[in-house]
Amino acid sequence: MIHLRDVLLRRGPEPLLEQATFSILRGEKVGIVGRNGSGKSSLLALIQGTLSADRGEFECPAQLRIATVAQELPHSQRPVIEHVIDGDQGLRDCEQRLQEAEQRDDGVAQAEALAQYELQGGYTARSRAAHSSMASASTCNASTNRSLPFRVGCECGPISRER
Image (tube, rainbow, N blue to C red; front, top):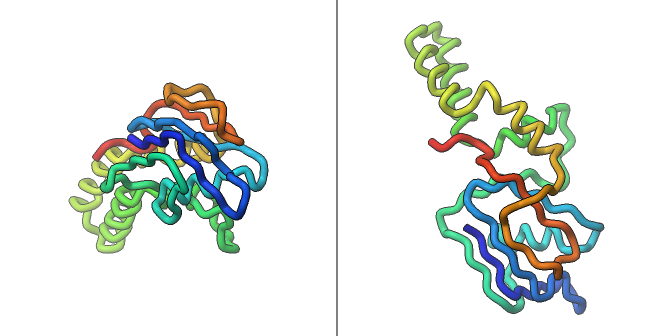
């Protein structure tokens, strides 16, 4: 669970966030929408631990894994969905094991990898990634206050299956 209570976050003399309070519960998918310069990237930097709040309380479990896609993707012919799926390392590892088993023509290892692929949600990963990368903020169980200069919304449910 991620909690912000009465957070002040500055970049330069003007505050980006002031008296910001909200919680994100385990399993919620969150979208942040707002104008350029409103503090979206700074909020993410705070959550990722690369920026500290100027005031207020920020709580985030130390073992929390956060999957992100860079704001600016490197020039690539790769579809954006593949970058989103890269956030699920377990699924990528499973795909690698499957590819290696196919190259060795090892039917048993292929079957095991395909079973794990299904458990990892591999057959629905692309549609879930497309939905998650296209979704904007929606209604949410997370409590938020009106002091944020952008919308924080979420859709409850895991992004990837539990391992």
